[in-house]
Length: 159
Image (cartoon, rainbow, N blue to C red):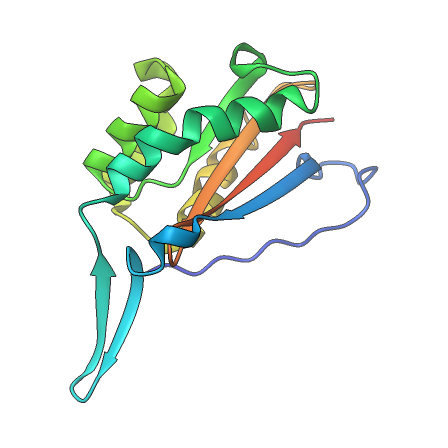
């Protein structure tokens, strides 16, 4: 597991990070038993259903498209894709659902290869790798996932 934190402050701080343009959480109601924890007499047991890639493939393209369109953007406007690397099949499902190239998926694949899945904090570690490379005006989309099957889309823009 991983741990991360973010300090959020005014957008005019020199050397600060990207501006959070918008964030949209989504819980898929029919997915409560797909991901999370079971508490048993012997301790906590991780629940990770094989249905997760199918949920991603079925739902994320439309969800991301609508979120970006609400800001007058499309997938081609996103310079940086910060996608929670929940595993090989999950990243493949995101790539298929969003129609992303290998290059666009590289941050997630690199992180998965080097560190594995550090839970929801993974996207913060990926964000940290972008600080020296992101150009002013570039947009990024951070997609984190959590229990049930929940996700949060966060639109970023580098000042």
